[in-house]
Image (cartoon, rainbow, N blue to C red; front, top):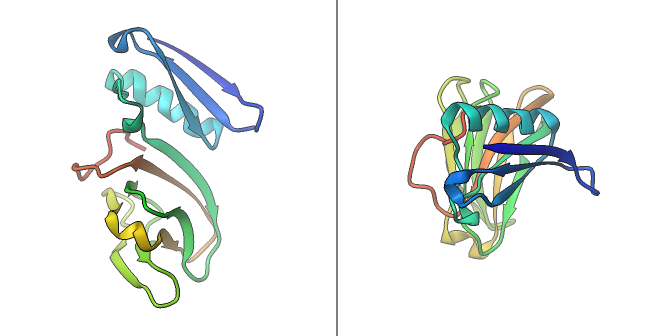
Length: 159
């Protein structure tokens, strides 16, 4: 198993992984920070790999700074399915908001800092969907986003 870590031309951190089980091909993961990339390397080595031969099975570990106040949008979807996993910060609230002004909230949950919480965007994103969070103080948030629907309740990448 080989990996390369580098900064791309748009200053995003990328991690390339070569897993012999996938025919020796290189897979590229894009992350938002060096910390996230290092967490992927550690997870890869501890778990024995988490990539499959299908590129759409690749999950992205995201890191964002979130300010307190009203609901903050983390991810937006239009005609797409996705699943995200959250764990911290303790006391933060997460939800999926469908549509715009006259929309509705779904899957509203509170993070406890211990258990993973899952948000899924389904075919309802035909009308526009947003994964949102509400925090009480400035925080750096780390979460995992996977394309498509994921049938499991906990992430394959531990963070």
